[in-house]
Amino acid sequence: MFFSILPLQAAEVHLSVAASMSDAFKELAAAFIADHPGVTMLPNFGSSGSLAKQGAQGAAADLFVSAHPKWMTYLETEGKIAPQTVRDLVKNTLVLVGPQTVAVNSLNDLDALRLIALGSPRSVPAGQYAEQAMRAAGVYERLAAAKKLVMAKDVRQALLYADRGEVDCAFVYRTDALLAEKAVVLYAVPANLHDPISYPWG
Image (tube, rainbow, N blue to C red; front, side):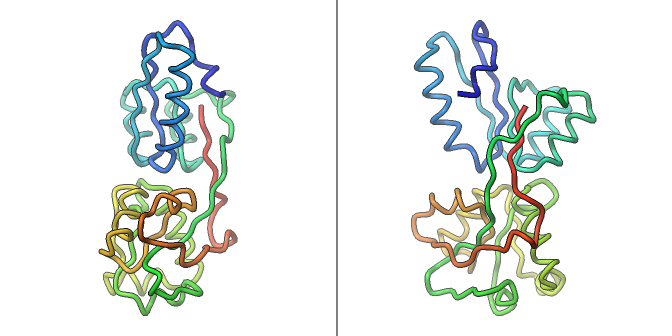
């Protein structure tokens, strides 16, 4: 388990983890605590951009997991993370989720929909990948001008909007789609339309 890099004598371990990895890290933290009962895990889940900015401002974090290399590079530039300690943890894919009644066979089909949710591209990597994909498909400007894009604070909120039926579909990671109660995967976004999705940690 990669938590083994953390100092075992520490009574508290501060984790800053991308929201899309929250469930996986809750399980990992529980398993680690079971083996090290003297350690308390203090997780902080949120958008990678928000977490990185918190770290740059001095927020405690023994381990940072980002959903986009950009925010790891940002903390390296700020002198908060040593480059030699950074490595890729896992990879993911981008999908569109929504009610089974919605048909999406390409990103061009988004023009016919009412509302599409995505994490705010300013701080949410899933939203950045979604914007890249829509721009590559030539639909982003039209959807933005028509006010069809609903910005969420993180990928889990975008998923919630789709699961509740508040939007026609939402851009989320495939791992998040597994947590949906009602929404289903409507379309897998071609990987060549956006940057590779990886989760660096350090």
